[in-house]
Structure formats: structure tokens, C-alpha cells
Length: 535
Image (cartoon, rainbow, N blue to C red; front, side, top):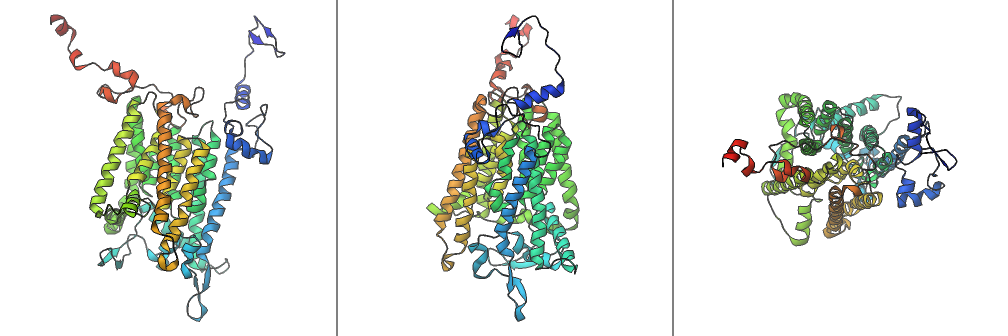
């Protein structure tokens, strides 16, 4: 029985063949593509400003130019522009030198009062980039934490360090060209760096949107996150998110070697993309697809080594500075350890003790996440485990620099597409910047007490823990996962998408999915048939 188009039914009529184009149009016109104006109450209310939610009979996906991706890229440009203007107060010049020579105006703690601080500006002089020095080769001396003079080098991994060097060369070439608009060299350098970071964040938005499948609009929170305004240009982390998001997109397109190359480049910029290999290992082990994982892991290691080896061999002390500095530094102001110290006066641990404690806590979190991934009733989505692991790393690590929160943004929108929850966390996380800046003013500068700052950090941590709990709940109740609609399994899964569970036989029963535990022979049943019959 089929519909005759007039509401009646006709029988014994063979359906006419449907062309792929017509089928695609029908799918776009119904509910295959997520439409937030219909499915999300917050977006539905906001849409009244521009005429209301999309109509039930609208032909979705027919616009030739103003596509969802282009709309989100435009939104990202707006938020990146707001981020640049938020930092622009820190590149203002004034007659600071003798005879009125213009210089960078950071008088009266402008960088904190105007909340425009960015690592990019002071690092231009501190890393000797202003002198045209090559990172990792040039050293300088400065007082250490113990008061002793220590030799310092560029403190960033190789890709981030070389990015700063290339940006410096472009800034100096611009400054030396008489017919181009002029300004302080550090301001030109800042603009060059932020231009590249803006392109990297646009690449992050693009890769996240392409990884979202039918829920392409989820990436709108990557483009329009409050954290973009505050931290897109605080440091160089947008480069890392671009490589990590690109690596996940390559994996989703079943290109494991390309995924490994991008993750290796990301790890050579900041180390966190290496964490994404952990969830890949767990899920590939559960699905019995270790070969693609091995290809990705090998490509990651080879790429990281190829980028690092020249600097490692030519300038070993400069290359090792990143690892030395991170092993010797204490608890970051934004870390949970500093929050505890602020309220209860402990822990007052040495750097080595803090390293051990944070490593043990993170290892325990990894084991717990691995157990969840292996034993959940349905195999978790890759983005879910990646978000849990990166969040656990930040919560247990002794360093949570404010811009590190950008790492979570693409993973969060793919793992937990609940816009109001995500927007609440991002807003709280972005607002941590305000008491942080005013805490740095100190009592002499009429700054806020430390507990005002650490209280907001605690609220941020609670918000991240709440997101982790929501992700875990969805893993245990996969029918409540809005991503898994219809026949959708895991848009980022790649070879894991729609794959059945096939854990190896050597995996213990307690580490298997519930529906596979009965297939593992018990120790008492491992005898051969003749042995059982003879007994």
C-alpha cells in the first residue's frame, strides 16, 4: 500500500524508482539534518529575532552560497574580531622613551586593568625574538625560583617556537618596508601572529563542522564561544586545536595515516593531541580494529620525530627547555592544587611531589575512562572519550593555563551537543579571566583577594565535572544521545562507525562489553572435549 498523493491508499501499484538526487532532497527536506530552531528550545527562542524557526515544509540544504558552514565561519570571524579588539589595548603606544620615543604603553598595569593581557606581546622581548634570535639556539640568563641565576631558552615545543620565529621575520620585513603602514614592531608582530591564529581557529571550526555529520550546527558554538573572545589570542593554542580537529576529521574520513600526521604536528605544537590516541586505542581494541590504530600511532610518532629531530640534534638544551620547565614549575594559579592551597593552606608540595601526584591521579582517570570505553553497553563515540580524557588531564594536571580551555571546545560540542549546558560552562570559564586579571594587580594595585579568583576557578572545575558526568550518563544510556539519531552510530568514528564489537579473545571478561562476556570460556571449561568426557 502506498500513498496516492491525495490522502488515499492504492494497492497493487509498484513504486516508481527514486533517483539519488530526489532521495537526497527528500532527506534534506525532512528531519535527517538537525535543525536547532526546531530541536533546541534556546535556539528556537533566539530565532524569533530573525523571523522564527525554519518552517516544516522548508527545503533545507538548497542554499547555494549561504550554507551553514559559511554562516558559522562568518560568525567565527565576528568573534575573532571581538577577541582582537579585546587585546588591542595592550598594543597601544605612547611617548615612553627619552625625547618622546614611542613605546608600548603598559603603564599603570594597563594589561590587567584593561584585561587585555596576551602572552604574545611580552614573549616578543622575553624570548629574544625582538633581537632576531633563532629559538632554541639563543639563550639568556634570569633569576630562577630559588634565586639562583639560570640559563633559559625558548620554552615552547618546536612548531610553536618556529611559528613565533617566522612571524617575527614577517613583522621585521614589514617594518623595514617604507611604503607599508608603520607602527611599533611588537604591535606588527602581534598582528601577524593573531592573523595566523585566526586562520587556525577558522580551520578548527571547519573541521569540527565537517566532523559533526548531520548535526553541522553544533559547530556554531565553536565559532561563537565566549572563550574565543577571551583566549583565541592569549597564546598559541589555536594552532593546536586546528591540528587536533583536523586529525579527528581525517580519522572520520577513514584516513588513519593523515590523522596521525596531523596529530603529530599538533603534538609538536602542544602535547595534548597525543592524548587522543588513548581513546582511539580503547575503541579500536573493543572493535577489533587495531591495524588502523597502529597506522595512526606510527604516523603520529614519525611526524613528531621528523619535526623535532633537527632541533633536538642541533640545539639539545634549547629543545629540552620545554620539558625541563614543565617538570620544575609549581602549581599553576588555575589548577585544583592551588585552589586547595588557597582555601585550606595545603598542599605545599615540591615540584617533584606534585608531578608524582598529578601523574598518579591522571593514570587513575585514564584507567577509569578505558574501563568505561570497554564495558559500556554500546561502544562510546570517539568524541565522548576524547572529551573525558582531555578534561581529566586538565583537572588533574598541575598546570591549567586559561587558554587551555580552548582544547575542550571542539571536543565538547561533538561529545555533548546540549547548547545550554555548553554555553553555561563556556561563559563561566571565560569569566574566570576577570578576577584573574584583577588578582594579579595585587594589594598595591587595588586587586581582588585571591579567594575571589580561586572561587571562580572552582566554579569552572565544577562545570567541567558536570559536563563529564553528563557525557558518562549518555554513554550508559545511548538512546538519550541526540547524535545517535536513526541509523547514526558515530560520525567521527571512521572505521569504528557501525562496526560490531569484536574484542580479542585474550581480553579478560571483566573488560568486555556485557554482550561479549558470555563468549569467553571460563577457566573450568578450557579443557578439551575428550578431557571433559573422561572426567
